[in-house]
Each structure stands twice: as C-alpha cells, then as structure tokens.
Length: 310
Image (spheres, rainbow, N blue to C red):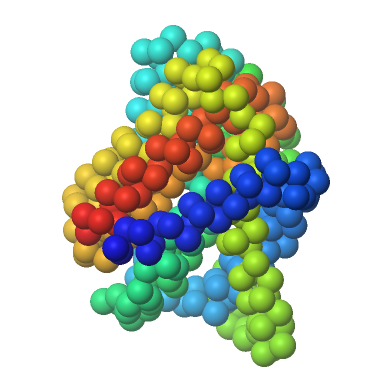
C-alpha cells in the first residue's frame, strides 16, 4: 500500500498530462508553456525559499550529497562505457551520457519524497528539507555536467567550450535561484512574511505543473523508432544508477532514511531539461526525447522497488 500511496500520485499526474495533451483538451503548446512557467518561475521560487530558510542546516546534508555526487560520477563513467559497447557515435555520446545521469529530481524526485512522511533526521532537519538541500547543489552539478558532456561531443576540450558553457550556466533559472538562496542565507537575512508566502505559493505549483508537463511531452515521442539506444540510456539511469547510489551510500555510512532518499533521487527518470539542452548544444534530438520517455516507464519499476524495500 505504501508503494501505491507514494508513487501513484506522481505517475497519475504524469498520466493526466498525457490525457490532457492527447485528448486535445488543452492546446498543443499549453503544457509546454506551463513547463516554461515552472522552469522559470515555480521551481526557482521553491528552491530559493527553501534554501533561504534552511541552508544553515546544509552541513548535515553533506554526507548524503557526497554520496550522490560520487554515485553520479560513477554513472557518467558507466554511461560512457555502455555507449562504447553499443558503438554510439562520438557526436551522439554526450546526449546518451546526459540521459544516463541527469535525473528529474525536481519534478519526480521531490514529489515522491514529499509524499512520504516528513520525519526528522538525526542531524535536526526534516526529510523534505534534507532532500531540497541535496537536490539544489545536484542541479548545479547537473547543469555543469550536462553542458560538459554535450560540448565534449562537439568540441575538443579547450577555450572554444568556455563561451557556450558560461552562456548556458548564466541562463539557467534553477541554478541562479540556488545560488541566490544560498547567498541570502549566508548573508543572515530573513524573508519578509509576505514575500515568503508568495514564493511558497509559487513553489507549490512547480511540482504538479512539472508532472503534467512530463506527461504532455511523452505524446511527441515514438518509442518504437530506434528504441535500443534510448532504452539503454534509460536503463543505466533508472536501474544501474540506484545500484551505484546504494553502493556509495553504504560505503559512506548513510542512515536508512537518508539512503532511501538517495536511492529515490538516483532512480528518477531523465530530466526533461536534458532535451532542451541537447537541442541548444546540437545533441541528438531523437535520442534525448527517447531516453526521457523510456526512463519514465522504467523508473516506475525502480522507484517501486526502492519505496517498497526500505
């Protein structure tokens, strides 16, 4: 019952997004625009408000964040290994690897964790706060890592990468909100109550709108066309990734609650924004969209195992 109560709301929201788009109840661009509002407004508001109020507890999340960083680096290496075994062309390898490691932490990981009981952890914060404190820095890493692997497919490592790299980072709202929230907290400032309530309300819309957008995006993907390589990327993301997360978490001595949250985050499907970045940086459009779609399907299994087993 816990698996159903935890995962059903998340994936039912994705299914609603599919139904809205497929039935024509909303226009073709509605969910795309809703996703844009979420990406530029809702998610940054959520990250900023959470970090501004809780970043002083960030030191306690260090071990969980370290485990996720280590596991993600291992996933990236594994992604390149699988790409080599499948003989994925070099120009496409960056898109493949990005699909392997860049998880949809904000629109799937956080809703799953937020649907679980918000129990206090040993170091004095709630599970939800710990999740945000881990997700925000990981989104910084994902943005940097995604740009690097995509550019390495198109350029040799060198100064030619600097301009597109800096441009991408400077125009990523969740990254900017994360840095602003951390700076605000370190400055010792407190948000006025009316600003805090406004940002919290905007943040609350991010998760459901993001899930609807995930569902709407699946309509455009042909899962039967050239499915092997996208499916391989999805399996690395949703099956191998949580296994490596488990190994890293156990090695670093995470507690049961932190380990479960880590595995949920590692088992998330590929982030929708990886498609946008693949387009911006001349990656493979079909591979990027296929990896996202397949990973949504395969993540149902991996997330059910994680939630049910721990």
